[in-house]
Length: 115
Picture: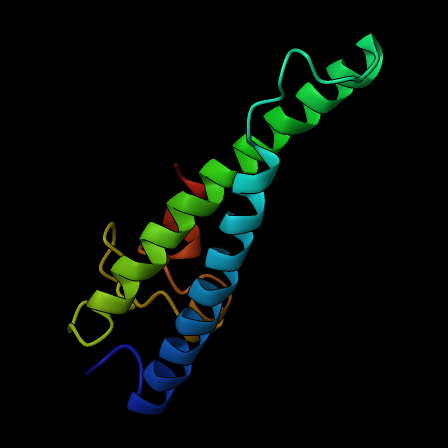
């Protein structure tokens, strides 16, 4: 018996497509924020340190966004496979609720919490 119904998979596919579009826009914006700050930039010392701190945070968020984008693209490729929605650890259904929030999930909540 399939873990997810056809209607649920269609809903998840739409969610994935929307999330991918949103992430691509977010990544473009973050790439602007993570451009190097020129040393001759006319910022005061403290303001320059703050800008560098903000840039570091933006770099971390950018890295996470890129990883999630890759995972969402992978989920989109797996969506029609029989194992989509099945936990890779325990072979139980991941559940539509979790998949709705994190459609790239490959583990159920219990197995994800054991990591």
